[in-house]
Image 1 (cartoon, rainbow, N blue to C red):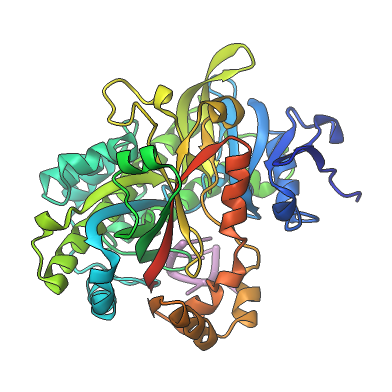
Image 2: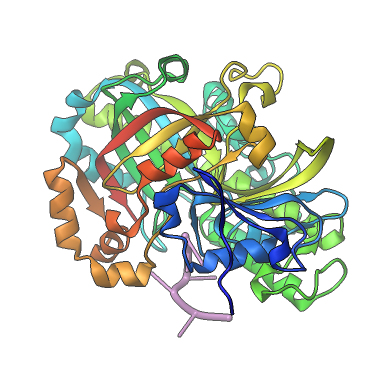
Length: 482
DNA sequence: ATGTTC
């Protein structure tokens, strides 16, 4: 099998020509500078970019962001838009962790005020916010509450006192996907979610206390309420067992076949279903319901963080200036209108391990982000840095207003586990002034900074290609890992 | 990512 050709288009862009395979309906475009390109040669995620380019209704290109790596069916770090009328929706194009995403909380606290309390903060957070596989929440919701959460997302959180109106304004889609229907979420999926609200999960999920190390764009930085030397808190988690079960249910149903199912795809894991079919709509409504659950999950953690910081630092939470900078999803399929060539089209845009990064022009009237677009939160590895970016006009034309979602794995979990000793990783982090509280030594090895691509190169690529504008670099000070 | 192999 000959190697997939990667043609360099410019310093930050590679292309897999449509002519490479007669079944490709569009080319593959991968955003990568020469440094990132080294991690791509021979990588299986390139085959996945090609496979996605063959799916019905795909327009423009099958795209990969610089943090691309192999995933279930679609690559992680992938973006693909399908014609609303003639195209598909695919659980593999969203990911098993529906609405996996990030919330960044800004504060008025100087990082130096926090440092003396960092260990106590991590201990308290670890106690109050369950983390790790199968850890249960301290409270359990009932079936009626579950219906409300799945239908209304953060609206439920506001009515219960877990969120403010300001939180909703700073959350993507207002923390509520409208086209959601709990009826399409299986009893099994609901059951798994009943005691998981306010839990972090495991793997790459984390909670970090960070310092704003550098502001690269002063205007955008201050409009996002980010200032050098201040503390931020970043939360990375998703829809937990509930979303996982929704994905499992629909992957299974689609693979069983039936009306609307796309047959003859190159990879069984690419199983997809026409968006307009009954099954396609049921998945869409269940996915949105799981997304609402994830918005609430992250919000409950925000609410816990407010109280933990107040208790440990003995400061009234009101006086810490704790406000959500932005909360967003990086595993979602959404209906959006975009230009494709000279046409304006309604698309089902799949972003799997990719972040929506709309510029001000794409924010609806009345949005508080009309000037610069919304903050784009990019978590890096736990020993290096995370970023806040902003969208551009150019990315609307290039990538449906999308950018990367993180550093992207370089080594598999297994390989990392075998390569890094947890005690060495922890020592090295401590020497750089980063404290860590982890549910297990295993997760420390698997998440070792050396397992990831260089976040600075990933961001340099999305900046250089015009997909986003770097606004702030955040460095970790305290890390909680599930 | 995940009651980490239905």
